[in-house]
Image (cartoon, rainbow, N blue to C red; front, side):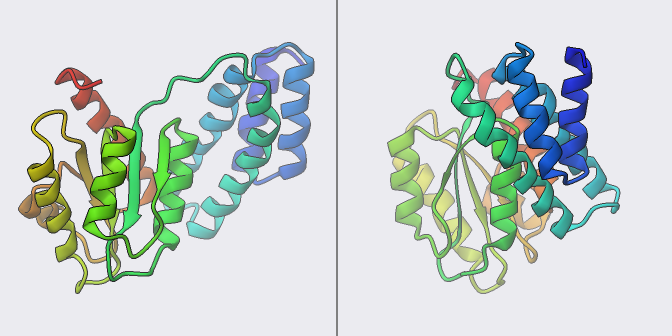
Length: 220
């Protein structure tokens, strides 16, 4: 197999949820002299991009996305130790479920999709207080703070986090994206969020757009 065939096979293995194939192709990529970084970007990550498109088209659903992500991680376990240089992060994201809410399945899927797209993720888990969001964002010099909520009773906590960010940052403030079942785009605008996504693939697109905005504003 030539390089393009190996990369295509890696992509296909992720989309088809074939762990055995993704392991074989990851090993073959290294044996064939394909750089680990290229195999990750043009094989595994490209596979997850296709998974996102299938999800948008209602051909794949949450269970399929989870299995595809698990398959991708099998390939990453082989390729990451072989990277010859530190891969440039697409951006640093602090993410968590807002205080009072313990529903994190959707957030976990978003985390997997963002990681596969090359973002550096700091996952705070669930029931995260505004102070924890702020402190972690400052510690890691976050580009984006991402919050989710599955309960209408906890949504107001998102506004509190945004207010605290505005208070603690004079400049280079992280951009904010929000999501979750009861969250809507009008609500996101109302509380001053910079982006809103209704699903995991959408979260990746919004994060990429926010990073473009951040670089344009000179905050990279």
